[in-house]
Image (cartoon, rainbow, N blue to C red):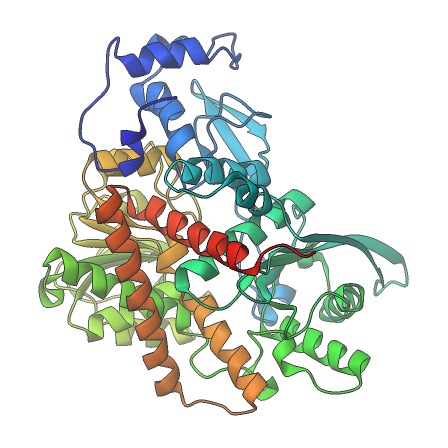
Length: 530
């Protein structure tokens, strides 16, 4: 077993030459690489593709991608975008990616591959186990989902043909409360992916300390190929299949990849018809007209803001002098940028799929948001103001700023560009924007990385608020939602920060340890029946 000190993510010692790490790496690795070379031949690889690759395989919590039993030899993972069609955009769908849509780079060669996300999640648990005192019996419980349902979802297409799709719903652990997790529509959805996502949702809810377990669902389909009517029929049929498992006190779905408030409205309506009465609390993320919560749309971006302000305060950085770069100007990025600017920060760089822009004195974010409301594709392209410079996405990530908020896609900060990052703090607004290798490199540089499991938890917290309001049949005002969200986010940050300092581990590892320990304690307190 390699030195546990690397899990802190804050060590600055470089390992080169014939260090113990390299020698152990050579001894433990013998898998073949593309082109006939072997991973054991670390002399042919840059350090970040050799010893650091293997080290990150043991100690990363972004996703242990580098030592998968089924796919050895992976150095880092990049993700391919999944473009939404006009039909999907018309009902509010976003561009997302599935976990297994990946590629690997080995010795400079690009090879298509797939990874097992459930294996990733279990390896994360293996790392967490080293930093807890959880007994073996409880670990056995935590490593298995409670229920995993696979269903067939037949629908009639617009041309009259019948097509059958595979659907899934997993309830990973309900020790802390009913399961909670989104439903995604994507061609790459598999049972193992859904199991892994349900597990991650379990720990995320525990970190935020909301009374939920973790769940997840999805249908293996390409929603860009469906008309609106076909999407509705698919959703309603899937709802009838999983209806015996879901409910306000059982399992509460929400939007996820390629689903939105319209899909949630269809699920709630179908469930109500099957039950014979309205069940608005059976899903969250609904439209306001169908029982959604005020403030839900802005919740994730607002949560990122609360976390950013809390971290800067702990580091002694005055928000009024802070320079912030935001990668991604969609829902999360634009809202976080606006709120941080209102708090006094200078947003010196922004980007979206149309380009990246830099303005040393800071952007007028209100003006920028108003521009994107009417611009083609709601993009930044075409915006113009004095002293503004168009830059590349890579240049944005490498800007000398106080805070970098990656709020776009997965795997944006990789081993290839992590060494160029100069930000003092990274707050992950997106899911998985930092690869495992990059996570290690950033830690070596002393950069504080606030993990996505904490930074973007505002969405699930506000989903909890929506569920509470539906059960009580009493809607809150938006100000009340925002105040409660702020208290929960600040408390979660304080708990993770304290654990990180007390145990001398990274914020990412501290967040996972905190979440897993809370679920384990609930398992102990409830006991086993019979």
